[in-house]
Amino acid sequence: MKINNDIDRKKTPEKVDRRQFLGLLGKAFVGAAGMSLLGPLGSSFGQSLPGEKGIVITDIKVATLRGLNSTSRIVRLDTNKGISGYGECRVEDRNSQTELNKCAPVILGMNPSRVDQVFDTITALLNPTANWTQITYASGAIAAIECACWDITGKIYNVPIWKLLGPKLRDGMRMYCDTPSQRSISAMQYAVEERVNKGFTWFKTDLDRILSSSDYTTSPDPNPYTASGGRAQKILDSGYTKWMDYISAYRGMIGDYPLGADHFFAWSPSGGGLQLDVASAIKTSNILGAPEYMNSKLGGWMEDIIPWHYYDELAQIKAGTDMSILTGEDIFGVPLLRELVDADAIDIFHPDPATFGGIQPTLQAALYAHSKGVKTAFHMSNGPIALIMNAHISAAIPEFLSCEHHYTDVSWYDSLLDGIPKPIMGKDGFLPIPEGPGLGVTINEDVLRQHGTWFA
Image (cartoon, rainbow, N blue to C red; front, side):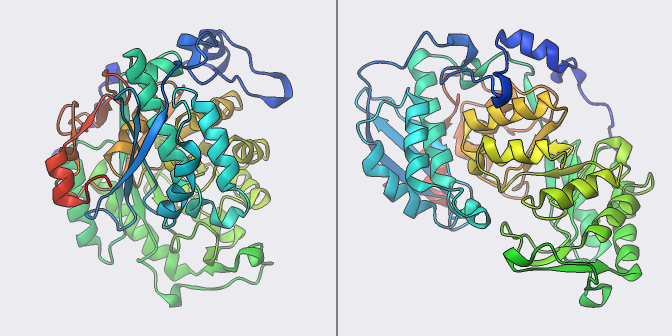
């Protein structure tokens, strides 16, 4: 198996520093608020178009993708002008259908091209930040509806969504692959080889299944996770040895490509269950960040090494290691991101736009993070509509790193969409950003009916 370490640099933008980027936007950040906000139609249209008159939402339909997850839902908004728009709820949001049912009577009759008004209305209705431990289970409908409104708006003006957001900084979105943890190195090697052969140039591995209960113990340090029901754990030498052996073998498979790590224990958006204590998180980052393992100089990261809500503890971890600290997939909205960045708690912002609130909130937050020297990558555990949404957002983010592809083993994933080259990700590891109106893709009805339920 040949590893090609040559990235097509034509696909990546020249580095744009923060001052240059703000000049490109032609807009200043607003004082203490730190927001540039471009308005619902972005810098291309500025404030000149308050929304297309006479168009209203007349119906909301939902389809489920059975082949991904029982809660994987695609949303379609219909209008009185015969224009429909699509969005997607985050797969992990088990309550998204209930949220959509609440939103439906409220958004009917609203103008979808006034994206900000629709967003504000449904956010006030669902109040997803009322309990930080439940954000992931309270925000999927907001992101799906917001994206569908942008899709409609792009179709109204016959331009792709990225053109409504601001200057286009790249033609393709770099992808990273998820690699669920395997109990044996040989099983991991098989999975990694498949991903290398598909063209991925950025990798992430999960580590939760590699250790046994004898490889860690209850931490003697104070437990910061009491409010969420979590238990702080200390990793023992045997655990570090297992992780080092596993990561060393992974590194040998991918050469000098970036490698991130996730799921040090089982995922929990609330911080419940087992969690690394701060000392173990720092030690893990430093051990695995060594050149023979993940190698901190190659661009990887430690993902959700502790729950995102513990700003002070994350800041301690960040200060104690050269390995990049990344989190954000379970956050909703710009205010929470500002708190995390202002606490100097992360190196990389990692939202899932299908949780964070959709297109405009994610872009706003990424621009704020960039203004503070924090780069952005995307969590993406969803279907292809959400993936294409992410591509449009990434086009306007300076120093964007990569976007996750969680379903590299699902053979029909790419075939759900028409209007974009197949496979969706090219052999160079990049997904071309669509040029068609709105999202720039259409749904293949036959494939949807084979692997899900049609819109109803």
